[in-house]
Image (tube, rainbow, N blue to C red; front, side, top):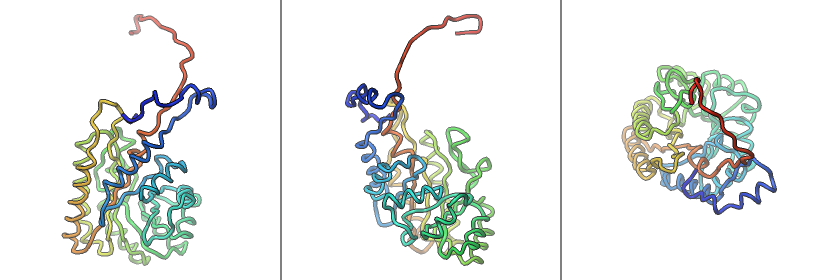
Length: 300
C-alpha cells in the first residue's frame, strides 16, 4: 500500500454496502502520480518508458499511462487490442506498442501483422512465423543475458531457469535468421526479473548495460535498448523506497555510454508494470467472526 493511501479518506462502509465484499479499492490520484513519476524518470530525447500492461490492463489504468506519455509493452494479441482501443497508436514509427513474447498464440500473430506492431521476438520460431504470415517490418530481439533477479524463482526472468528470450550465446544465429528473412533488428531487450532487493536490481541494470554495449557492435540496425521492468516496490510502509532519481541518472549515463560506444544515437527504454499500479490498490474484506484455538503438543 502506498503511504499516500490513507484509508480514512475513503467511504469503505458505503462502498461495501453497495458492492459487497471483498472488493479492490483503487485510488486514481495515486495511479496518476506514479505514472507521472515513471514518465519523469524517463524524460528526455533518448529515454522512454513503457507500461507493462500485464500488471493491470483496466481501461482507466491504460488511460493514465497514455496521458502520462508512456508507451505500451503487451504480451498477447488481446492486450494489443486493448491498448489500441485505449488510444495508443498502431505501427512501428514510432513503436508505441511493442509485442513481447516467446511464442505467437491465439490472435497475436494476426494482430501484429495487421496493425504493424513491433514484435519483440523471444524465440527463433517467431521469425519463421512472421515470415510465413507476410510481416514486413523491423523486429526487436529479447535477449536472455544468462543472469536474473527475482525475490522468488517464478519472478526470475533471466538466466538458465527462465524460458524468456534468446539465450545470449544464440543471438548471432537468430540475428542471421532475421537478416535472411529481411527483418532488421532495431531494438534489443532484456528483462531479468522483479523483486524487492534494491542493491541487486541496480547491479543487474548495470550488468545489462554492459551486455548491450557488447551486443550493439554486432547489431548495426539497433537504435534502442530496453532494460525491462522490475523496479522495486515498497510493499511495507517502513520499507525503503526505490530512488528513481538515481535510476534516472543511471539511464542517462547508460544512454550516453552506449551511444558513444556504438557510434550512433542509442535510446534507452524501461517498462515497469507493477511499480506504477501496486501502490494504488488495496483489497478490502470484511471480518465476520473471531474465534480462538489453543496451543497443544503440535505447537502454537
